[in-house]
Image (tube, rainbow, N blue to C red; front, top):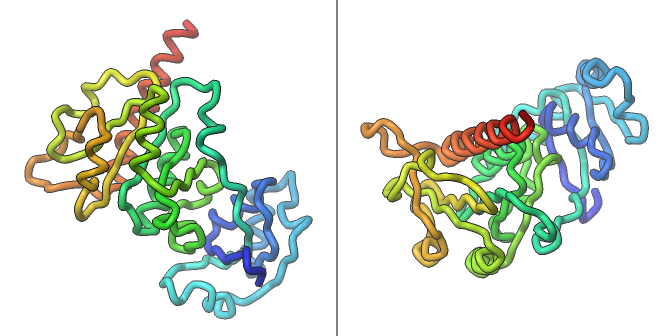
Length: 253
């Protein structure tokens, strides 16, 4: 195993890295059945053509997922990291950007689920503190279900200074908080926006909240204290995606 490589498990996670020409896949471990399934899912292109493939039994593959208590489904891959996108380069000459910023969110499953939703609804990227990003986590890759290949992850050294710099470049920061002043669906979303989410336990850090231009909330049953962060984010992402489609329809009609 190379120093720069790591293992991931799960059908969707492995198949999507094989589809991504920017991802270096060193080795793939499959069962005979999972190999057949890969060919069924990609009949026109042999995803295994340029990859070292080793066939194993499900029991032999268990060692790659037992520690995390994950189901490998007959798919294991050794991969290298993607090239990291640069935030300042990405925002050049672009408008109507929507970023997600995670403040103190560290759980790999939550991050993976959020990444899956963000990619599904065309969020432009996720900003996260580099030491909080579990970039080699099997749990995260499994929860993301292949979406790691379709989202920009901007790892930054300091969330607060990043927010300040983006605000100086005409980004609006919306902090999501159960005690927010407005329901997020009441906002007239336009321009460049940052959706700021804190951890489930303690929410946004107080010093980070100061960078929010607005504090908004999701309208839920008052008997329920809160939603899981990945569920909350998915609701917001879907709403913004719907609004964008409406705008596009009006402009193209």
